[in-house]
Image (cartoon, rainbow, N blue to C red; front, side):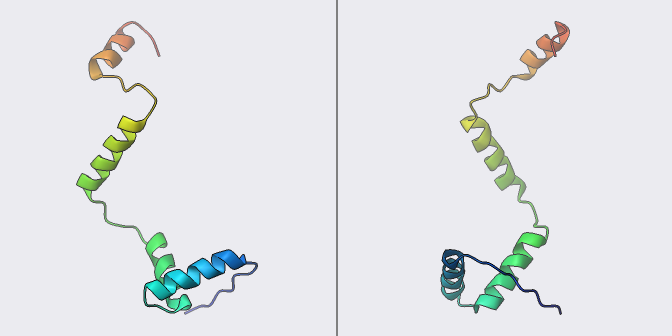
Length: 80
């Protein structure tokens, strides 16, 4: 295994990381390795959860979502 050194970590970030490590019952090093593994390994997608997130984003979007009929009508009228 390799080691890395991270320099110039702000005090408040270091404190927050130490607190999170303690809350998870890990040393700071083990917590960081665990977190880095989580963010670098592809995760299995839960399709139901993904669809829920997409619908939630769609509903909160200020943009108007066009129906299939509206899109087809716009294409038929030659609008981009």
